[in-house]
Image (tube, rainbow, N blue to C red):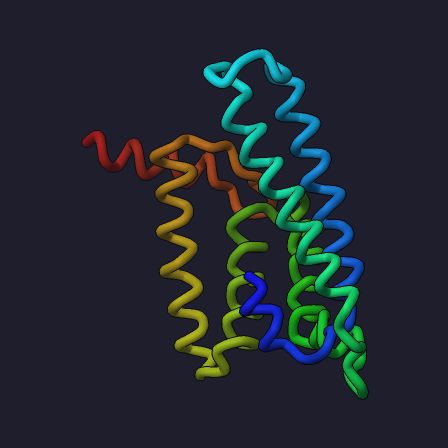
Length: 172
């Protein structure tokens, strides 16, 4: 691990905070592992989680100390480096999808979500984007709705009627 850090000459924006949060998360996991069985014995159910989380705490502390020793990078903006525009846009699209899925339903909102994201990220023709989106939606719908029978928000597309018609047609 130290060889990896020695090749890095500067500390990137947000790296100190991330390393500190890694320590906090590792200590939380260590506490959760301790709650399983404490330090009762090496063969207890909490022994492996304790060892793994203790390793995480130790490693994250070493990384944090090494990160503090590095000089800050010059000219790198935090949001440009840690949250590029495309990530921000996709996060906004995901938020809109989460808001729209209840009213529009799974099929329509997912189709729009897939089309917009694929077009934005892949930049092919709209027909190709629509085709890939429909194919992906069909596969996801079959797996989750028909195989695993997950109830998905219905919205404006009358899914129950369509499934009933397909079931009736299939049974004849």
